Image 1 (cartoon, rainbow, N blue to C red):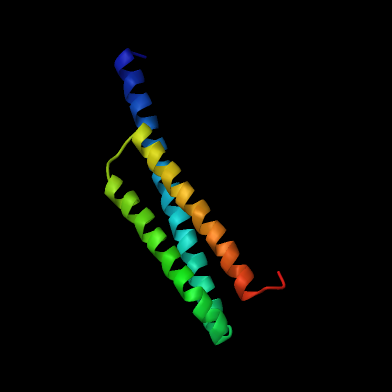
Image 2 (image 1 turned 45 degrees about the horizontal axis):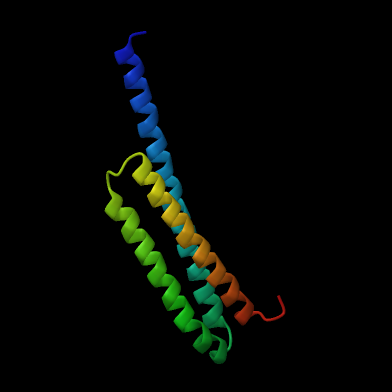
Length: 112
């Protein structure tokens, strides 16, 4: 196998890895959107007081999700280390969303 063949295979593997990272980041964003939607449904099913408390938090989480999605979409053809930085940013935003979601869930169901 020539050096050129090996370089081609390495490049193909790097491209596959970048694609998997993109898919993982997009999957995490989709998962958080579903969780936010679920929280919104809980807020609407709950008492009006709970809904009033949760509306600003839901709006904040939606804005964070939109920001993370915009960063993801803006990355477009980013490769290598830059994509790793992007996916780390998406994971960080997802953690922030998770913390906010946990706090919101406690507000809706205080017995948890």
